Length: 361
Image (cartoon, rainbow, N blue to C red; front, side, top):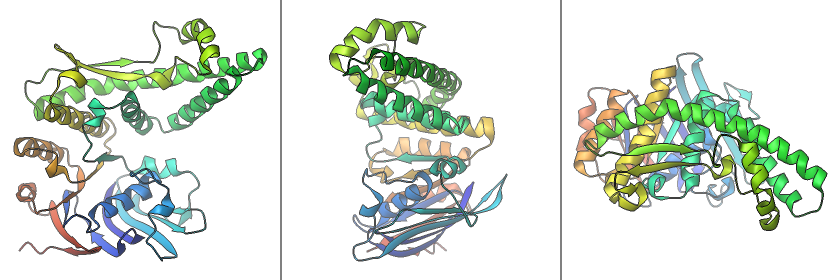
């Protein structure tokens, strides 16, 4: 889906903003604290149902305002014209609507528009905890198999229930939840492995474009040794009982990134880590485009502070060739926007929460 128009009201310091986006690069330019990131946050809230700053929706609501709202209008090759909106009053639940109809599951909206979020801590996908890479993997599986989100949710719940029972002497209930956890865990592992095997070549192809000559290996570790989750859980159960927590399974999975010199996190420079993280993000979008024809929206916060000139040219050149839509923030107007061609780039100025489109004629 291409986002054509966005309206934001009472999100942080943005009282009211209206943006007509182009299908290519859209840059929000302004000083720190102007409201640029709040606009990205508003779109993320609408599509993903939460803030990427990790706090509840109520923290996004402008001080003194009774409610916030975010609306967009777009075009989709399958659905045609699409309208999407959300509203949240300070003391009520979020109301979400798709083409005027109430939506009860946020995953329905998330499945409409594949959204990649690149923040200043982009390299944490490489240098950070396995949780970062599991989330990357699960994003990809979800956009290939939308019902995966239910399987994953049920698996996480089964692990929590099993952990609770581990602290009791209820062996019968422990056996029941262990069986359920294994069943769901095998389904999660199969879906993740299938997706990883499919996307891995595309990620490496993108890495060669972004950082020519940087040799990296990618290996999926499912969170247990060998081929049988059931056998591994059975062997681990005495340790689980002692610790009160399930030690093996997909919740301990990771994508192991390495090079001929060792673990990527230990040997890559910060710049190389950013290049690899970029390849992981862009590779997902490219695989989705190649396999399903689905175009991704990239939300990129202060990216020019994270990328050097050469990396920026390669990075945005790759996104342009993939026909991706981009909404990026910067403290200065980038000359790179000119390379996107006629009708493929726009610049907006943001000052104290007020947005105006820059006339570049």
